[in-house]
Length: 114
Length: 112
Image 1 (tube, rainbow over the protein chains, first blue to last red):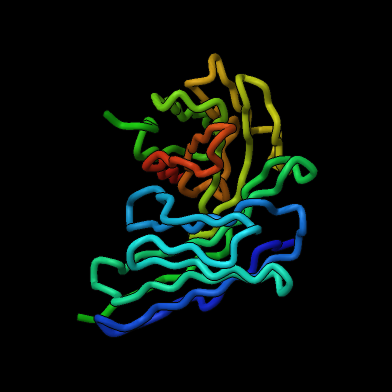
Image 2 (image 1 turned 90 degrees about the horizontal axis):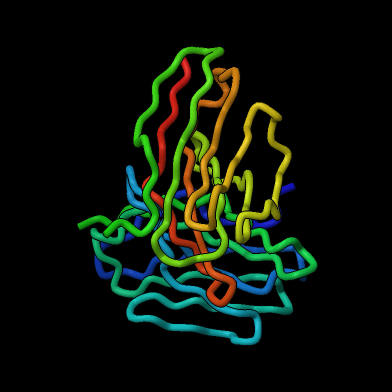
């Protein structure tokens, strides 16, 4: 059972545009929602994360928007650059009652056109 | 200094063989993980150890056996390799205080 649903599967954005990736979750035991960035041949790297008591978190060009009632969260990449081209994973960590597992979404391949 | 290092980076082996992948972290984290990434990039947790104690053991064939000799090391041994085991295996670590993972660069396993 996929507990974190991510969309779209792939995304093409013009340089300077806004990239938006969406995720939805089901398990209310999740208590931490990170986003990871993965370049080809590398391991995923933590990009930005949010906890459910906050509705938005911004770090540079990257912003997470979190809607607890809708069980949805999204990543916005402002002023997208070709160097942002990578696979992005949303994830959710189960708290104490969920066994402390981090479940990953299926990934979004982002391509930023120069 | 590499924070989470895995060896080997590539592993090509025949069906039926037994192989091991090693992982070490120098971040002082207390929890380590093995994830499998399939050809569609999907990341699935396999095992997790906290201070050498197994805390997560997903539905993984018994042919896969993790071992954590200390909290800085987590190895994965695979017996009787099958074609379907071909994937990229990632080791990761985290601390109790900070939930974000640090991943290794992965081991690409190809079973022929």
